[in-house]
Length: 621
Image (cartoon, rainbow, N blue to C red; front, side):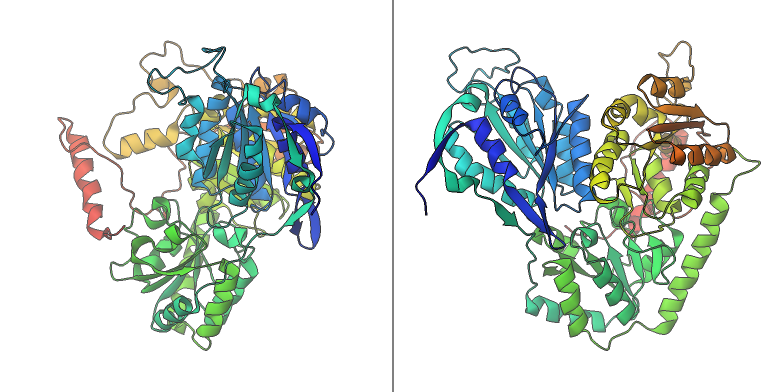
């Protein structure tokens, strides 16, 4: 091995390393880092900015408008690439970096790779206190960047240039690890960024990575097969990990071979097309009557690639108390939840192994027929739910119109508020892997930013398809500036802004728990003196998008056709009713805190009704 060295600054070494890390995807080599999102400040412009400027054709840097939205865009990019590629985010020292905390938490909850390269204070402390420094009187090493420790999978502060040799490979290993995948954070003190070191040239040699596939333990497979063979009413819960493992074909083949009904989590939407006979629908709080009906009767449940979040499990009331779980998951932590019989390993390899071990087993025909009948009833409900005509505008109607007109490979993005539930329940999947409903962290503001990140990735994979964003007025007002980003970068979005006058889904929860409407709908805010509707069309036009406002779903469909024909970002606005038109079927019980003591009789009654649902709740860990 050569002893040759190259003198670089810390910042230059980080960027040089990233440019030489490749990944093999379907036999093709490409950079594992697709580029980055950045807002420069005094903490990152002089050194990291200098290094990035030299590779702008290799690692494209997208200028962000808001650090939080940059992180959302990076998360959506990683989703679109099925966690095989990632983007970095760079922000200055202080508030710019802290703006990334929420998006780091989103990536952490969703097990998504995102690298953060953020400014930090001076390691010498000679100029302390410096601009934007948080002084801790009892621990001078403790600063704002320590806030990321709880929301990252890998955290480090680079205090010497040589540490890059250790930290970067470990950060990258975390980003590409199926079990530990999540955001990585590197704090870069402003002086250390510019310090030099004689790095070994071999450190920057091109390296091709591959996502590890961990084979399951065959004893665990044998135990799982033995339990599955006892099942009279088996069911498969398909989560987002099925897609990340590129195991969709194996899941489908397994279900078909053993004739086991499949239900999907929110993250697992689009594991199966809607018309597949074994696709019984989405499960849980925002699910379908069909999936929840068979969940109540299932005796053995095979959970594949899911962390079994409360919206999937109905806060653990969706299943029979005696039901047994088999959990296939790359992560040991997720595989062992709620007394599951764990199969720790890659979903593709585990399904193949379990299929062989359970060869010859099939679910009873009457069970499968009953599941299909439930799905047919749900399909009929959805068909009626999305109809429009002489009734108030609703989310479901808008979703149905777009569903009927879009291309099967268009990507759908939604997050937070009422739209995730409505998309999950009413969207009929046209093709595999085309739905991104961000509900791992249920983060308002993800919609447009995530759409931009997804579109960047989509333009690298399927440039002729559209990215379609569903957002409410609340999320739009929280974070909309990446409409401008999409226009600047030529990454077209089609965004539907469905305005119900405030935070209507939380108002619905407020009313459902016996409370009066208060501070959710704009008209119910006691500090609002003169409610008025925002002109979202004009606002979007001001950021360079084409935009129009429509009165009803029929007009929305015609506007969508114009948006499809346009070559630039297009925003379509429509008011929807905050009270009527919600999907009123398909829900499971969900645990929320309600007042145990109150003088309000309706709240007291609602508390008693809510607590009655707890009788079905499984006890577990």
